[in-house]
Length: 156
Length: 354
Image (cartoon, rainbow over all chains, first blue to last red):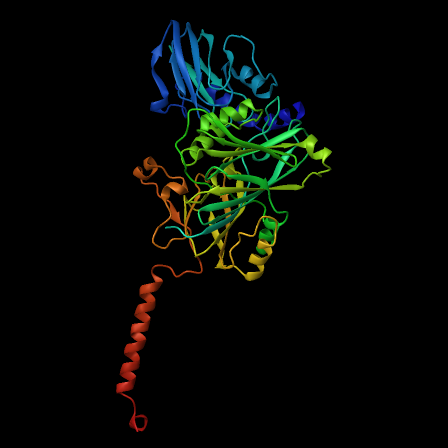
């Protein structure tokens, strides 16, 4: 079973790598390809403590881009309106890669990582220290390539 | 009023499986160890005097403990029983080479309820069958709570179907039970449902569930109707392969199978092939056998919002029928020919007049 999952995930590794690379390249500037006006939080939040509510419906985050100032701690409130489980993983490319390849079905309380069971709400916090771009995504099998990802644009 | 309608179709089914660790595989189906797969789900639905006889077959292969499928239904079944053993194979043989997939029919009934309601449960061979009523979220939640794993596109697809029909059939294949019964991998289990309904339609979008957008979906759809049906699809990707009176041998063969005595003595046979990318297969097939009533766009999967945006279903092209422009051309040619004959007749030589 684990081998099967790994094989399945391995097939999508290139896509993840490309996406993560894009995030890295674009880290210091504006993001492209994820800036649909209706799904982007246009106002820059922070610095300090802020709360962002992410709604999941039909296996998509309602926000594709979030703008925060360096030195902002974001409390993510994730509202899963789907009848299936999801998760929110916030972190750099290495974090995303590990979760895309990983086998941890449920994540323990960890900054920027939270499992969101079906039709529930969960929370996690993440501190955005420096300017750049940080991805958030769901890495349950098939969810990332289905489009469950977004970016936190840490501006100046 | 719609005439009697019989739809024979093939469906690669839906979702799911029972497993502790989620995984993704062919058609959104994975077994506990990742090797069980739904080989094919074949369906025959027949509409006669307001009752649809719905026969579907589940065929699995691989190793593992459990795997399942969810299929939208046109209404609440009054009877769920084991179907005939070779009806579906006979239909497939009719359009040789053998088909790879098949379709089901469904239709709106009551409004979605706040919770999924289990209407009926039974076990047929190694299949645990549950008839559910509820909205997409409720049915999805029931599936998760009962050990099914839904692929990420399942919430949207379940909502899509529940807006028209809040009735679903969940089927779980128990590999251990199959082994105990001596059922070999790849053996099919036919299921027959008797469903009162008055507006059959054929779900196609369900075929792409769990598939990547660029993955091809190829399947076969069979229709048996009292009259030549009008067909309306959400988009292109359907090819009408056969449209003709059903031959008597086919009807006799179907009628002689178990629980198949409802097959009428005279029917119209239609065979369509689906060949589309999963990402493009966002529609269903609406049908009508009443010449005074066109198939409904809603039954092809279109909402009022879709129509307001200018999206519209397309008639399925019938290569055996004359195109619209061919009619005036034919009339014009007949007219020219008639005029020519008149002229020739008036100028005929004297020896002809004599």
